[in-house]
Length: 375
Image (cartoon, rainbow, N blue to C red; front, side, top):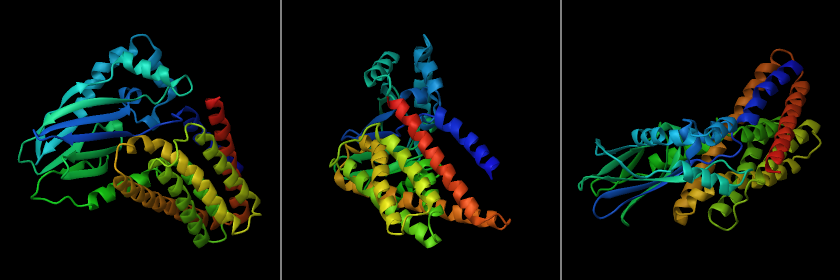
Protein backbone atom coordinates (compact mmCIF):
# COMPACT_ATOMS: atom_id res chain seq x y z
CA UNK A 1 0.00 0.00 0.00
CA UNK A 2 2.83 2.37 0.89
CA UNK A 3 4.60 1.73 -2.40
CA UNK A 4 1.39 2.37 -4.33
CA UNK A 5 0.91 5.66 -2.51
CA UNK A 6 4.52 6.79 -3.11
CA UNK A 7 4.27 5.91 -6.79
CA UNK A 8 1.01 7.87 -7.11
CA UNK A 9 2.45 10.86 -5.25
CA UNK A 10 5.63 10.89 -7.37
CA UNK A 11 3.54 10.95 -10.53
CA UNK A 12 1.30 13.76 -9.30
CA UNK A 13 3.79 16.16 -7.74
CA UNK A 14 5.77 17.05 -10.92
CA UNK A 15 2.54 18.13 -12.57
CA UNK A 16 1.58 20.28 -9.60
CA UNK A 17 5.00 21.87 -9.33
CA UNK A 18 5.65 22.57 -12.98
CA UNK A 19 2.23 23.26 -14.42
CA UNK A 20 0.94 26.79 -14.54
CA UNK A 21 -0.57 27.55 -11.08
CA UNK A 22 -3.02 30.15 -12.44
CA UNK A 23 -4.83 29.99 -15.75
CA UNK A 24 -7.84 31.47 -17.42
CA UNK A 25 -9.72 30.26 -20.41
CA UNK A 26 -10.19 32.38 -23.50
CA UNK A 27 -13.33 34.40 -24.18
CA UNK A 28 -14.64 36.45 -27.05
CA UNK A 29 -17.35 38.90 -28.05
CA UNK A 30 -18.58 39.03 -31.64
CA UNK A 31 -20.93 41.60 -33.17
CA UNK A 32 -22.44 41.69 -36.66
CA UNK A 33 -23.47 45.20 -37.64
CA UNK A 34 -26.04 46.46 -40.15
CA UNK A 35 -23.46 46.25 -42.95
CA UNK A 36 -22.86 42.54 -42.19
CA UNK A 37 -19.38 43.21 -40.87
CA UNK A 38 -18.51 40.62 -38.24
CA UNK A 39 -16.19 42.16 -35.61
CA UNK A 40 -14.63 39.63 -33.23
CA UNK A 41 -12.56 40.39 -30.12
CA UNK A 42 -10.81 37.36 -28.60
CA UNK A 43 -9.21 37.60 -25.15
CA UNK A 44 -6.64 34.87 -24.50
CA UNK A 45 -3.39 34.03 -22.70
CA UNK A 46 -0.89 35.05 -25.35
CA UNK A 47 2.38 33.46 -24.05
CA UNK A 48 0.88 29.99 -23.68
CA UNK A 49 -0.70 30.29 -27.14
CA UNK A 50 2.67 31.21 -28.65
CA UNK A 51 4.05 28.02 -27.08
CA UNK A 52 1.21 26.08 -28.70
CA UNK A 53 -0.12 24.90 -25.32
CA UNK A 54 -3.27 25.39 -23.30
CA UNK A 55 -2.77 27.90 -20.45
CA UNK A 56 -3.31 25.20 -17.82
CA UNK A 57 -0.59 23.04 -19.40
CA UNK A 58 2.09 25.66 -20.10
CA UNK A 59 5.05 25.17 -17.68
CA UNK A 60 6.37 28.34 -16.08
CA UNK A 61 9.89 27.35 -17.09
CA UNK A 62 8.95 27.33 -20.79
CA UNK A 63 7.01 30.58 -20.42
CA UNK A 64 10.03 32.26 -18.82
CA UNK A 65 12.27 31.10 -21.66
CA UNK A 66 9.83 32.55 -24.19
CA UNK A 67 9.41 35.85 -22.36
CA UNK A 68 12.93 36.58 -21.16
CA UNK A 69 15.28 35.06 -23.74
CA UNK A 70 16.38 38.02 -25.89
CA UNK A 71 14.58 38.04 -29.22
CA UNK A 72 12.57 34.86 -28.54
CA UNK A 73 9.24 36.58 -27.91
CA UNK A 74 9.64 38.99 -30.82
CA UNK A 75 10.40 36.18 -33.26
CA UNK A 76 7.35 34.23 -32.04
CA UNK A 77 4.79 36.95 -32.73
CA UNK A 78 4.42 36.63 -36.50
CA UNK A 79 4.26 32.80 -36.53
CA UNK A 80 1.77 33.00 -33.69
CA UNK A 81 -0.27 35.57 -35.59
CA UNK A 82 -0.39 33.34 -38.65
CA UNK A 83 -1.26 30.30 -36.53
CA UNK A 84 -4.09 32.24 -34.91
CA UNK A 85 -5.44 33.33 -38.29
CA UNK A 86 -5.19 29.80 -39.71
CA UNK A 87 -6.93 28.23 -36.74
CA UNK A 88 -9.81 30.71 -36.58
CA UNK A 89 -12.38 29.52 -39.10
CA UNK A 90 -15.74 30.92 -40.04
CA UNK A 91 -18.40 29.36 -42.23
CA UNK A 92 -21.52 31.15 -43.46
CA UNK A 93 -24.15 28.60 -44.46
CA UNK A 94 -21.39 26.07 -45.05
CA UNK A 95 -19.08 28.35 -47.07
CA UNK A 96 -15.74 29.53 -45.70
CA UNK A 97 -15.37 33.25 -44.92
CA UNK A 98 -11.95 34.90 -44.63
CA UNK A 99 -10.87 36.74 -41.50
CA UNK A 100 -8.73 39.86 -41.39
CA UNK A 101 -6.63 40.53 -38.29
CA UNK A 102 -7.01 44.14 -37.22
CA UNK A 103 -4.84 43.98 -34.10
CA UNK A 104 -2.67 41.29 -32.50
CA UNK A 105 -0.55 41.70 -29.34
CA UNK A 106 3.05 42.78 -29.93
CA UNK A 107 6.08 41.61 -27.96
CA UNK A 108 6.35 45.03 -26.31
CA UNK A 109 2.69 45.01 -25.25
CA UNK A 110 2.95 41.49 -23.86
CA UNK A 111 6.05 42.29 -21.79
CA UNK A 112 4.53 45.54 -20.57
CA UNK A 113 1.31 43.84 -19.48
CA UNK A 114 3.22 41.06 -17.72
CA UNK A 115 5.36 43.65 -15.95
CA UNK A 116 2.31 45.58 -14.74
CA UNK A 117 0.93 42.39 -13.21
CA UNK A 118 4.00 42.01 -11.01
CA UNK A 119 6.56 39.26 -10.53
CA UNK A 120 4.25 36.91 -8.61
CA UNK A 121 1.41 37.24 -11.12
CA UNK A 122 3.25 37.67 -14.39
CA UNK A 123 1.18 34.87 -15.96
CA UNK A 124 -1.29 34.53 -17.54
CA UNK A 125 -1.04 37.56 -19.85
CA UNK A 126 -4.61 37.98 -21.09
CA UNK A 127 -4.76 40.26 -24.13
CA UNK A 128 -7.05 40.90 -27.08
CA UNK A 129 -6.82 40.05 -30.75
CA UNK A 130 -9.34 41.84 -32.95
CA UNK A 131 -10.52 40.50 -36.30
CA UNK A 132 -13.15 41.35 -38.87
CA UNK A 133 -14.96 39.43 -41.59
CA UNK A 134 -17.76 40.22 -44.01
CA UNK A 135 -20.61 37.73 -44.13
CA UNK A 136 -23.15 37.49 -46.97
CA UNK A 137 -26.34 39.47 -46.40
CA UNK A 138 -28.61 36.42 -46.66
CA UNK A 139 -26.63 34.24 -44.24
CA UNK A 140 -28.79 32.10 -41.95
CA UNK A 141 -26.18 30.27 -39.86
CA UNK A 142 -22.54 30.85 -38.91
CA UNK A 143 -20.18 28.14 -37.69
CA UNK A 144 -17.17 29.38 -35.70
CA UNK A 145 -14.05 27.41 -34.82
CA UNK A 146 -11.10 28.64 -32.75
CA UNK A 147 -7.44 27.55 -32.77
CA UNK A 148 -6.98 24.33 -30.80
CA UNK A 149 -4.37 25.92 -28.52
CA UNK A 150 -7.04 28.25 -27.11
CA UNK A 151 -9.00 25.34 -25.69
CA UNK A 152 -12.59 26.16 -24.78
CA UNK A 153 -13.56 29.74 -25.66
CA UNK A 154 -16.52 31.33 -23.91
CA UNK A 155 -18.30 33.19 -26.64
CA UNK A 156 -21.01 35.85 -26.87
CA UNK A 157 -22.16 36.46 -30.44
CA UNK A 158 -24.94 38.81 -31.44
CA UNK A 159 -26.50 40.54 -34.42
CA UNK A 160 -28.27 43.74 -33.48
CA UNK A 161 -30.90 43.19 -30.81
CA UNK A 162 -32.56 40.27 -32.61
CA UNK A 163 -30.10 37.37 -32.38
CA UNK A 164 -27.75 36.51 -29.56
CA UNK A 165 -26.05 33.26 -28.59
CA UNK A 166 -23.87 32.54 -25.57
CA UNK A 167 -21.88 29.33 -25.82
CA UNK A 168 -18.75 27.50 -24.80
CA UNK A 169 -16.92 26.73 -28.05
CA UNK A 170 -14.37 23.91 -28.06
CA UNK A 171 -12.45 22.26 -30.86
CA UNK A 172 -14.81 19.30 -30.66
CA UNK A 173 -17.98 21.44 -30.49
CA UNK A 174 -17.70 24.36 -32.95
CA UNK A 175 -20.11 27.18 -32.21
CA UNK A 176 -23.23 27.60 -34.32
CA UNK A 177 -24.84 31.02 -34.50
CA UNK A 178 -28.24 31.64 -36.08
CA UNK A 179 -28.60 35.10 -37.66
CA UNK A 180 -31.59 34.58 -39.97
CA UNK A 181 -35.36 34.41 -39.56
CA UNK A 182 -35.75 31.14 -41.44
CA UNK A 183 -34.13 29.11 -38.67
CA UNK A 184 -34.63 29.31 -34.96
CA UNK A 185 -31.62 28.87 -32.69
CA UNK A 186 -32.29 26.17 -30.14
CA UNK A 187 -30.82 26.15 -26.66
CA UNK A 188 -29.97 22.46 -26.77
CA UNK A 189 -26.54 22.82 -28.36
CA UNK A 190 -25.56 25.63 -26.03
CA UNK A 191 -26.78 23.77 -22.97
CA UNK A 192 -24.92 20.63 -24.02
CA UNK A 193 -21.74 22.68 -24.53
CA UNK A 194 -22.10 24.30 -21.10
CA UNK A 195 -22.72 20.96 -19.43
CA UNK A 196 -19.69 19.51 -21.20
CA UNK A 197 -17.49 22.39 -20.11
CA UNK A 198 -18.66 22.16 -16.50
CA UNK A 199 -17.97 18.42 -16.62
CA UNK A 200 -14.53 19.12 -18.10
CA UNK A 201 -13.61 21.45 -15.23
CA UNK A 202 -13.67 18.37 -13.01
CA UNK A 203 -12.77 15.60 -15.45
CA UNK A 204 -10.06 15.85 -16.54
CA UNK A 205 -9.03 19.38 -15.47
CA UNK A 206 -10.24 19.71 -11.88
CA UNK A 207 -7.87 17.53 -9.89
CA UNK A 208 -8.74 19.56 -6.76
CA UNK A 209 -12.43 18.76 -7.19
CA UNK A 210 -11.54 15.11 -7.72
CA UNK A 211 -9.41 14.93 -4.58
CA UNK A 212 -12.06 16.61 -2.46
CA UNK A 213 -14.76 14.30 -3.81
CA UNK A 214 -12.49 11.35 -3.06
CA UNK A 215 -12.14 12.56 0.54
CA UNK A 216 -15.92 12.99 0.84
CA UNK A 217 -16.46 9.48 -0.53
CA UNK A 218 -13.87 7.87 1.72
CA UNK A 219 -15.34 9.52 4.79
CA UNK A 220 -18.93 8.53 3.95
CA UNK A 221 -20.73 5.53 5.39
CA UNK A 222 -22.51 4.76 2.12
CA UNK A 223 -22.54 5.66 -1.56
CA UNK A 224 -25.81 7.54 -1.10
CA UNK A 225 -24.26 9.61 1.68
CA UNK A 226 -21.26 10.46 -0.51
CA UNK A 227 -23.49 11.59 -3.37
CA UNK A 228 -25.46 13.76 -0.95
CA UNK A 229 -22.25 15.45 0.18
CA UNK A 230 -21.35 16.06 -3.45
CA UNK A 231 -24.65 17.84 -4.01
CA UNK A 232 -24.16 19.99 -0.90
CA UNK A 233 -20.66 20.87 -2.09
CA UNK A 234 -22.05 21.94 -5.48
CA UNK A 235 -24.69 24.11 -3.84
CA UNK A 236 -21.96 25.78 -1.79
CA UNK A 237 -19.70 26.68 -4.69
CA UNK A 238 -22.72 27.72 -6.77
CA UNK A 239 -23.52 30.44 -4.24
CA UNK A 240 -20.12 32.14 -4.29
CA UNK A 241 -19.61 31.61 -8.01
CA UNK A 242 -22.94 33.28 -8.71
CA UNK A 243 -22.23 36.11 -6.29
CA UNK A 244 -18.92 36.97 -7.96
CA UNK A 245 -20.19 36.53 -11.52
CA UNK A 246 -23.19 38.78 -10.84
CA UNK A 247 -21.00 41.45 -9.26
CA UNK A 248 -22.28 41.04 -5.70
CA UNK A 249 -18.85 40.00 -4.40
CA UNK A 250 -15.45 41.16 -5.62
CA UNK A 251 -12.96 38.89 -7.37
CA UNK A 252 -11.07 37.01 -4.62
CA UNK A 253 -7.67 37.11 -6.30
CA UNK A 254 -4.76 34.69 -5.96
CA UNK A 255 -5.11 34.21 -2.19
CA UNK A 256 -8.06 31.87 -2.67
CA UNK A 257 -5.88 29.15 -4.26
CA UNK A 258 -4.02 28.20 -1.01
CA UNK A 259 -7.37 28.06 0.78
CA UNK A 260 -8.70 25.64 -1.83
CA UNK A 261 -5.71 23.38 -1.24
CA UNK A 262 -6.28 23.74 2.50
CA UNK A 263 -9.85 22.44 2.14
CA UNK A 264 -8.50 19.39 0.33
CA UNK A 265 -6.01 18.71 3.11
CA UNK A 266 -8.61 19.19 5.83
CA UNK A 267 -11.13 17.05 3.96
CA UNK A 268 -8.63 14.21 3.71
CA UNK A 269 -7.61 14.61 7.36
CA UNK A 270 -11.20 14.58 8.62
CA UNK A 271 -11.96 11.48 6.58
CA UNK A 272 -8.76 9.86 7.90
CA UNK A 273 -9.68 10.53 11.52
CA UNK A 274 -13.29 9.51 10.96
CA UNK A 275 -14.60 11.35 14.03
CA UNK A 276 -17.00 13.79 12.33
CA UNK A 277 -20.75 13.26 12.58
CA UNK A 278 -22.93 13.01 9.49
CA UNK A 279 -24.32 16.50 10.16
CA UNK A 280 -20.80 17.90 10.38
CA UNK A 281 -19.89 16.17 7.13
CA UNK A 282 -22.77 17.98 5.46
CA UNK A 283 -21.73 21.36 6.83
CA UNK A 284 -18.10 20.81 5.83
CA UNK A 285 -18.68 20.34 2.06
CA UNK A 286 -21.09 23.29 2.10
CA UNK A 287 -18.50 25.60 3.68
CA UNK A 288 -15.66 24.23 1.58
CA UNK A 289 -17.88 24.58 -1.47
CA UNK A 290 -18.12 28.31 -0.79
CA UNK A 291 -14.31 28.48 -0.93
CA UNK A 292 -14.07 26.45 -4.14
CA UNK A 293 -16.73 28.66 -5.70
CA UNK A 294 -14.54 31.71 -5.14
CA UNK A 295 -11.67 29.94 -6.88
CA UNK A 296 -13.86 28.94 -9.79
CA UNK A 297 -15.20 32.51 -10.01
CA UNK A 298 -11.67 33.90 -10.23
CA UNK A 299 -11.28 32.06 -13.54
CA UNK A 300 -14.64 32.98 -15.09
CA UNK A 301 -15.77 36.32 -13.68
CA UNK A 302 -13.68 38.47 -16.02
CA UNK A 303 -15.27 37.00 -19.13
CA UNK A 304 -18.78 37.28 -17.71
CA UNK A 305 -18.67 40.93 -16.72
CA UNK A 306 -19.70 42.12 -20.19
CA UNK A 307 -22.70 39.80 -20.47
CA UNK A 308 -26.23 40.42 -19.29
CA UNK A 309 -27.51 38.84 -16.09
CA UNK A 310 -29.85 36.48 -17.91
CA UNK A 311 -26.94 34.98 -19.86
CA UNK A 312 -24.84 34.70 -16.70
CA UNK A 313 -27.55 32.78 -14.88
CA UNK A 314 -27.93 30.43 -17.82
CA UNK A 315 -24.19 29.80 -17.98
CA UNK A 316 -23.90 29.22 -14.25
CA UNK A 317 -26.72 26.69 -14.27
CA UNK A 318 -25.10 24.79 -17.15
CA UNK A 319 -21.65 24.84 -15.55
CA UNK A 320 -22.83 23.75 -12.14
CA UNK A 321 -24.97 20.91 -13.44
CA UNK A 322 -22.00 19.74 -15.50
CA UNK A 323 -19.72 19.98 -12.47
CA UNK A 324 -22.15 18.00 -10.32
CA UNK A 325 -22.42 15.27 -12.94
CA UNK A 326 -18.63 15.01 -13.06
CA UNK A 327 -18.38 14.88 -9.26
CA UNK A 328 -20.93 12.08 -9.21
CA UNK A 329 -18.84 10.28 -11.82
CA UNK A 330 -15.73 10.66 -9.62
CA UNK A 331 -17.57 9.19 -6.63
CA UNK A 332 -18.99 6.30 -8.65
CA UNK A 333 -15.58 5.53 -10.16
CA UNK A 334 -14.00 5.69 -6.70
CA UNK A 335 -16.62 3.26 -5.40
CA UNK A 336 -15.98 0.88 -8.31
CA UNK A 337 -12.21 1.00 -7.81
CA UNK A 338 -12.53 0.48 -4.07
CA UNK A 339 -14.82 -2.49 -4.62
CA UNK A 340 -12.30 -3.97 -7.08
CA UNK A 341 -9.42 -3.55 -4.63
CA UNK A 342 -11.37 -5.03 -1.73
CA UNK A 343 -12.09 -8.15 -3.77
CA UNK A 344 -8.39 -8.97 -3.50
CA UNK A 345 -8.76 -9.35 0.25
CA UNK A 346 -7.13 -6.08 1.37
CA UNK A 347 -8.73 -4.76 4.58
CA UNK A 348 -11.16 -1.94 3.76
CA UNK A 349 -10.16 0.21 6.73
CA UNK A 350 -6.51 0.15 5.73
CA UNK A 351 -7.30 1.14 2.13
CA UNK A 352 -9.60 3.98 3.14
CA UNK A 353 -7.22 5.41 5.73
CA UNK A 354 -4.27 5.15 3.36
CA UNK A 355 -6.07 7.03 0.61
CA UNK A 356 -7.37 9.67 3.06
CA UNK A 357 -3.84 10.26 4.30
CA UNK A 358 -2.61 10.61 0.72
CA UNK A 359 -5.29 13.22 -0.04
CA UNK A 360 -4.41 15.14 3.13
CA UNK A 361 -0.67 15.16 2.38
CA UNK A 362 -1.17 16.34 -1.20
CA UNK A 363 -3.65 19.03 -0.11
CA UNK A 364 -1.39 20.48 2.58
CA UNK A 365 1.65 20.21 0.31
CA UNK A 366 -0.03 22.11 -2.51
CA UNK A 367 -1.22 24.73 -0.01
CA UNK A 368 2.38 25.32 1.10
CA UNK A 369 3.53 25.55 -2.50
CA UNK A 370 0.85 28.09 -3.39
CA UNK A 371 1.53 30.18 -0.30
CA UNK A 372 5.20 30.27 -1.27
CA UNK A 373 4.22 31.38 -4.77
CA UNK A 374 2.18 34.29 -3.46
CA UNK A 375 4.70 35.44 -0.86
